[in-house]
Image 1 (spheres, rainbow, N blue to C red):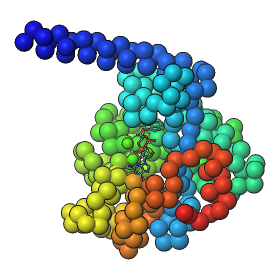
Image 2 (image 1 turned 120 degrees about the vertical axis):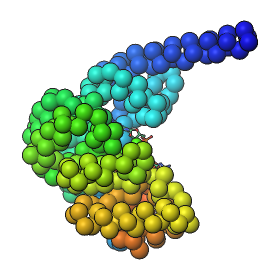
Image 3 (image 1 turned 90 degrees about the vertical axis):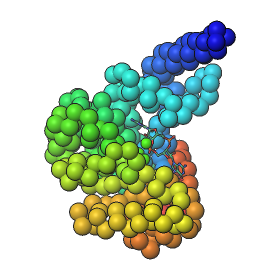
Length: 275
Ligand code: C2E
Ligand code: CA
Ligand code: CA
Ligand code: CA
């Protein structure tokens, strides 16, 4: 009816206005120190030792407060903005790693998330190389997390970028594995260093029979391929016990720690053992 159409229409306008102004704010955020990074530990299930971390981007909007990356990353991915953001993350993480080292902390592998669009750009390689050199970071301690989407879209270009990154000595990890498209063929085509099992496959462990079977199979597959396997979204001890028993290499999740500030992350690294 007429009324329904009107309501729908005005909602759309509000929604698109919001997106437009949020994108504008995000461009500005990059210049005005509203973005920052939190780090979430990766843990060995066997030893419960902290073995690495993932850098996760945060935005504190002056009016809206914290905006979640689930909301602003897709916005940034609609344009080149995501590349500027990615460059900023790479620079910031490398600087932070050097700072930790200068404070006497043992350097551990840190991963950053890189979007598909950014992966197509040759500038990414230059940026990574320059940041690693400038902050004296051993490349094998720097990991790039990509998603299946990256491997599906414009494969040839992306494969050549991934090759260049590997030549730098950087590690490549496939994120969110197990949801969406199956990329087993891609997986075998490009030699990845790590595979991250999506949290939706972890959520119902160990009760959900099908998911347990998938996990055991993935562990065996990863071992056979010489890839390390990370389970994300681990929230319960029952999930941890299952993953430990299956000999999954690394786990990450709220059970150990939420993503935390660089200072709190360095405290966790010093303690070494979690929780
Ligand atoms: P992701 O790469 O899959 O990151 C894992 C997400 O799961 C993070 O959400 C993390 O906070 C959350 N998480 C960690 N442990 C648990 C748990 O035990 N349970 C549950 N339910 N969630 C857990 P976050 O920080 O909101 O990030 C969301 C997504 O935004 C990321 O998913 C990633 O795709 C994207 N993102 C974050 N930072 C960046 C970045 O710097 N660059 C790009 N391109 N994407 C980013
Ligand atoms: Ca990730
Ligand atoms: Ca993930
Ligand atoms: Ca994700």
